[in-house]
Image (cartoon, rainbow, N blue to C red):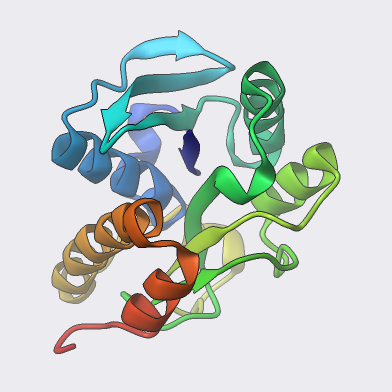
Length: 189
């Protein structure tokens, strides 16, 4: 069993913003895996089904970014799932736009949604897929809550597809394989 959570903020005003790239990847995964993410449970929009014999739970926490841990904590405790089978997908301002980085574990890197998850799960020991949104030219809040520039949209569309493929690769082949295959991938790779 895997719980896959994409981080973002609920509400139409946040759609297609940099901070919501995790939601975009969950939407792509839902499409690829044929899972409807429409049920409200664990303070999230969720969907579940089986893929290659593994139960897959997709989550889009509806708690707002800075409280994402509340949703994940509820789901992890309900299913009693080991943290190595919890995959979190989120934006990273320290990576170039469209770059993907997969890690087995680690700190929050200053990301408030990840701070919440790490605090409530009481662990940094869970896989994550980070997608670069680029360094802010203005203040951080305006950057992460802003929409992508027209010039960035192709890179982001490609990154969302690659991030979804990376999650599927983690499920099928393990995180080490996915890290060697996808880390650093960007347009042209």
